[in-house]
Length: 268
Image 1 (cartoon, rainbow, N blue to C red):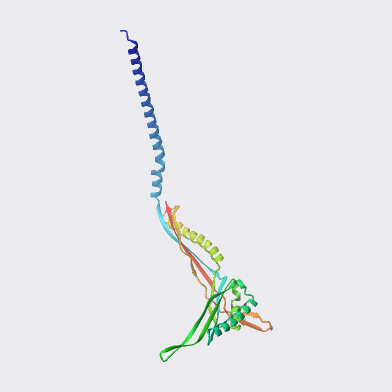
Image 2: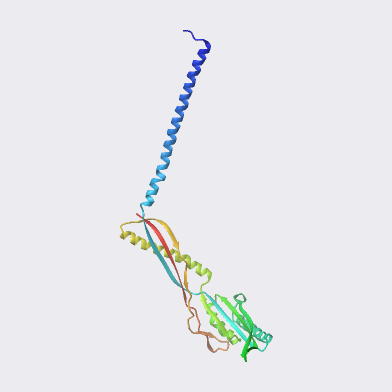
């Protein structure tokens, strides 16, 4: 049987279409297989194994602590002058004269200008309650000078010098640590507290037949300080006239600084 030209074209076209369809299907199937294999290879080691390694580890929570005592290297001293007179102006004038004399005296024995500041100042009336009424009997002027210095060994000298110059109030004497010294101490205590926690954890893990394999979490608590109390002790000095004298016996004590940490370890 002889086919016409048009019939030949149809047969050839149909054959080519079938071949192209099979080619596309083979590409699709191969790509799907590759993607599936890649997905399996990527997911297995990053999910199940990682999760199991973490969840199978026991944990141990251990506290750690560190404490030290340091000699104070800073003093806060408050000295005051209180004067009373019939008028506010007179009370203020008297107070100002004494305060200027006091300040000059302190500067003459080594106190620096930048170590002083005014901490409080007030002028208030004084009343006398009689026969059902308040009567102003005078006025009181109060001026307080604050000394903030690292020259703690001069504390007693400053107190005696101020009183000799007219001060009639010693409001406060506080010994403490400077910010720089306290910061350095805190950094050291954190390291010691962490080391203390690790030592406890090693002992506990060894007793349980386990070993530490990592840290899950850690926290550092606020630092605690115990301000030193002034201690009485004589402080002799050489007077200008050659006579042996002593200032008011006040020196600093030691300040205690401590910190605590809490660490959660992984065990295996």
